[in-house]
Image (cartoon, rainbow, N blue to C red; front, side, top):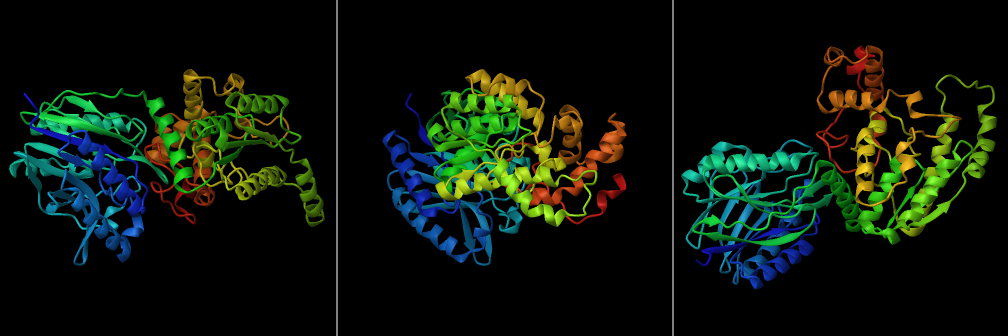
Length: 542
């Protein structure tokens, strides 16, 4: 029997605020879908503006440009019907909306009811909640409309079913988090089965500043069984054939392991940040350590070897094997590689500073000379960035950033931090994963104990707890908001816990000045965790 309805899922990568470019991307997808025989094309949440426009939503001219885009899309609906997400202003209120166009006319407009206000997203700042169920009638199909977090509210699904929905259409911009795709699929299966209705989930894909959108749009039958899944971390246009008001079984893109998902998320986030912001490539300091090694692998996978420059900047404390490993990796990946010793710069600085330091004894914990090494390196990579219009990738990880084991205006210099939300133990795991795909990181880099190499015979573990312990404390304190008492009850050493908590609390000022990086954990430093810099709250724990 021929299909009663053929629709197309448009899982696309948009640029926030590029309304005219996004509209052209949508029009191209409409034409492609029409050529493939689709009768209805469905796009993701806020597709016209990209998600999320943030304070662009406060501008009058944004809505004027959205209106022009909708006029163009209405014309395109002469040949194929369209469901598209966009912001909409009505009187004094703004809404997160979906519009249904068919035969050149607006047929229905639905407003999101369950606004997203977590994970660094603050929709209530901009939008008013809708109050009515969304339902469209098309080709004898009654389709209930839901946007994003509407799916979390069973009452909204019941509302759509009561209104007569025979199919649920969820248009979303669901951000990636570690193991989040599996949790999302479980939720969608549950909602579809509870309602006894087929469900189609259309998600955005791409990197947008701190957020990564995984795609993975999905189709479920009325029993909550997955019958179609689009690929992760790439744009796609796929047809869905509804036979007797039920979706046919179609291609199910393979499910990725959690580490593979995270790695691809970091690659996509890096690629989109560089390309969407118009940089000609990237430059990074390659130290021979694991953080910069993983960052280099991500950069090459994101942009290709010709767009990546690695710079080794050795000093007196740089081990010979670090120099060798950095050179080996650069050669392995085929990137431009330079070695620029920093001793002349350091000596020049010290020549100027030594008279100013006269009479000042070096106290315990004085890291002036160590920090000066890092800042000399920062000056070098920033000069290359300016001259070559390449973005500096900073290579620090979440564990170091949490406790301030980094130098402000030194190794923190850069415009994007791919590992900002990746704990050190995950850095090791991701490095091993990447090497399982193809050789990218010298094995010795993974096996060696980590070191900042800013002092003789220095190791990270001289200054920090073992990373397995540190990361467990940080996950509990930063991501789960556990108290000192809860951490001690969990069996952590009291002295270590108090020290780590103090380091986290007093280094908020550093984190606030650091480069942004992709969110891949339950809670990142940035939009998720917004703590005051000047605060006495945690001092009771020190």
